[in-house]
Length: 287
Ligand code: NAD
Image 1 (spheres, rainbow, N blue to C red):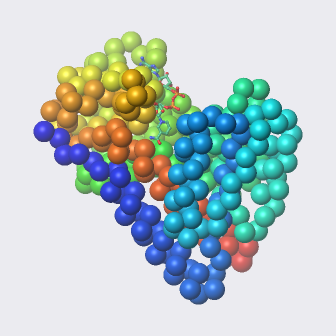
Image 2: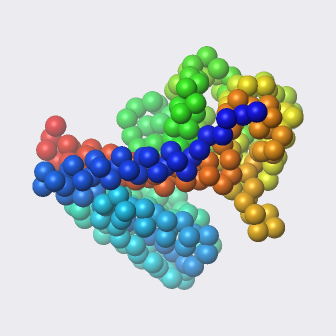
């Protein structure tokens, strides 16, 4: 039976540590890190995510702002809003809640964010930095996956890792991070011919395909580490991309849904915001 990787507890510990580090900063007269979240439209799931980001950023002592724009706003208004926060010295992180309503150009919005404030790590410059292995802001959900793998004590070095899903948001960056840690990485997607065989060979499985329980429990190799990124609402219940009940019998470590990767993503967003604050201060001081 697998040990459950408790993402909720891990996220709580990260937030407590962040609150302590921010308290230590402000006690010396330094300013609190600032995060703005921009929400366009009224998608209920996005409103929940934005509410959580607002609440948790305030709880750790950050300056936290929320901008809401109507779904029928012109793209130019969104860009102007992003640019106004690019110019604000007290704001270190700009997060445009995705997905944007129909008609918006998401890529243009992300590219408008100052890369040093792109705490979601989705700006092409930060994605490029990840690809080339140079310093930059790494995307929140992928670093959450790596952090959770880290809590197991399993070192990806030399292991066989299989990522299911190739989105720019999760699959591709998590594959790059695993590669950075010297895993041998296979990146699977909707056209992969024998997913069962691929998953069956994996010491580490990261499932991020958005298909409820696509990764069947009996595919999992005995002793594998299983990270389930999926969040699927089925009959009012949250279900992952892995068939948890069976996978748990074979894996050594597994994340639950909910309570695994989900709570970690906001904690990592806050980590990125503090890191961006420190990096921007250093750049301003010319260190
Ligand atoms: P996406 O729809 O952008 O990408 C899905 C990927 O899965 C695609 O690359 C596709 O090729 C692959 N895929 C789809 N069907 C497949 C199949 N049958 N076999 C193999 N591959 C298949 O999704 P995303 O944004 O990467 O999100 C993936 C999942 O992770 C979703 O459930 C999403 O809700 C969840 N998610 C969770 C968090 C979090 O904080 N925990 C963050 C982001 C996304």
